[in-house]
Length: 138
Image (cartoon, rainbow, N blue to C red; front, side, top):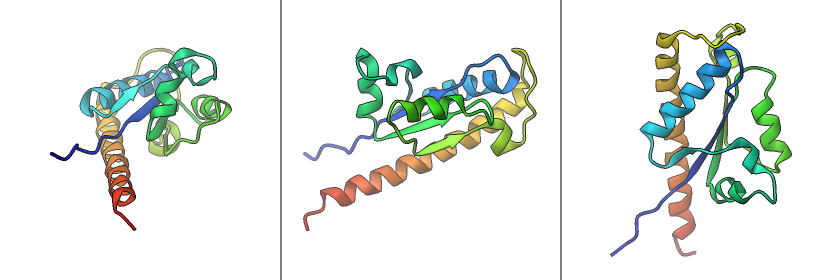
């Protein structure tokens, strides 16, 4: 019996003290819950020598959900030696204004989360196709 192809997508997200930082964290949670192959991983764990770093190393792709144009998550991922396959930021990609504080609009999060889930699904399909082609004898 053939083993099904499996993929792993690591999600690194912001959780900063602004509406879009909190939105990014909520969007990441929704992606994690919706897609069994996509999991939030501890951002500081990307650094070598930390035991959980393997989660990022084992991933087929990394998705960054930044909080804003400051791109803290993206820069942290890069400092760890990784290149994300997908980066999303509510202000840059969806035009959400950054406001200090922990409150955010639930309807906006719902819309953005659905769109991000679709983007991650598309990435997963591309990864699956790539894995299939790598298994075909030449």
